Length: 100
Image 1 (cartoon, one colour):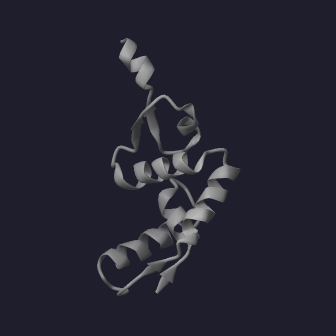
Image 2 (image 1 turned 30 degrees about the vertical axis):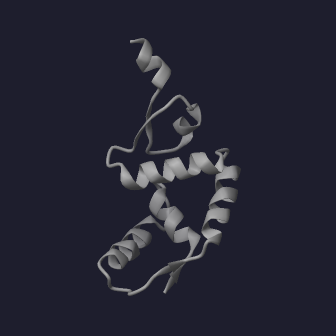
């Protein structure tokens, strides 16, 4: 089985029309119900173009995706204000918190 970018992107986003289906499919995959699952390396390129349209760099998109996917608090500690535009992410500004 191969899954496409829209499934992974729906999983990453806080709100997406495909999120429920994506979550169910990824849960089944993690339970081993679909055997070997492939994702094209072109996923990274497509993620780049999607993130560029939304005004974030590819690296910002990777960081945001990791934060939304792996951190239960969805919290980033950094100065880059671009993350304030991403629904579901909470940001603590390193510079501001350092001054306190």
